Length: 43
Length: 530
Image (cartoon, rainbow over all chains, first blue to last red):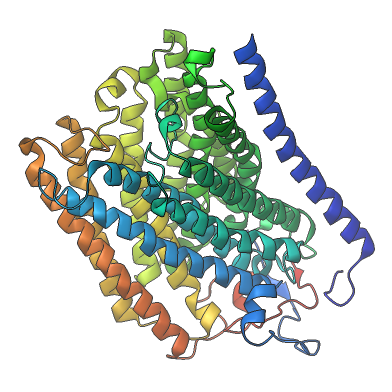
């Protein structure tokens, strides 16, 4: 059980990992789209 | 859905030694989800009037044929900025505000999972909004190519385009950070026993919306980044003269743009799914089918984008695919409308202001949905494309749809937020003025569109004069009646009849188990859900 006063370190790690995964996915889409358009236009 | 608490400790304030900070620093540095929710909602309210003011400039100009008040260049800036402000500055932040206030309380969490990120997500917004609005005062004025920012027209903009694109980047970044926070909160911070299929519909709709945001916002960011380099750094992603493809931008924009419609409407569905059962005094009919319908709508929203561009000259197979996939969306949407209606069926109905807005949503959003199905028919869309019929359609979805849901949600949860009941009589007057105003404004635009009036023009043939006059009168009625909403909210914040913890007659959900106003910190210890 999590309280504000006693934050579970495992939960904190999980939150950080989840946030990085979701944010990383967003960044990946951003880059992939630009690369895909560049390749399409160049081709 | 079952959310019964067992000896919850929500009212245990023993650890609430630190309340909110005092003065400005409370709002600048807050990491409290309720404070941040309030900031989002206030920002959205301010932007409602900024964007609404632009709408009234447009409607004043269109009150009669000929040029009255503004020149055509400024008119185009108004249509563009009105849309950008309303979509990115008003309705999206409003729903993020609701999410901030309600999601932690609904799932039994003490706060959002990433509170400092939450603060940053909000404080990006005022700067982005200011940058966007400042373009109106730059040389050549603000962006004027429509909110879709289509090249090659948008590439003829002045230097203010760089600022507008930067603002869109910031607004998108704020949305992505907010979405990350919501996903991580819902996946990690639910109280014990709060399984996914016990979550309130509002939380479900926001979880799915957050995934949509993560999927499509970077696409918009990529698209506008390429516009920026085309305009200022000599690239030719979308410039035909350099070998680029302008239609490619339309594909990219609408791959973002169509899911964006559902990013706005899914949280509205969530709010309506909270309001209707409460005032029907029945559980939501078909809860799990509502969840699957929401997921189905989200999936389909990603494979229909080219129905916005039937007229670019795509192959017949493409037209068929996008026509059929668009029509498919009517099925999960109809599941939702059916379930809301079935929830009301033989319920013990009462018609407080939130319920009035919810019922109006049901009827008027359905009108927008039906005209959407009409436009999905590719050969017919050739007639409607870029006419006022389109303007009528999407405004029915966004105003009596999304905005009514937001206003209904505000009335629904105001007593929980402020601890006071709002003035019910004034609320009902506000509803009727809004309902009449919105229909007067947008219904005649169907007729104008079918008669062939193009959108985004400051002047028009005299045959369109009558319905334009009616539409403008309705717009002013609707716009000024929203001042009443501000009055009601301020009055409610300042005082009024004390609200009970439950507020309404036996509502379902954890948020109604905490006192009204909700304490600054809720759920110091996680509640147990049976």
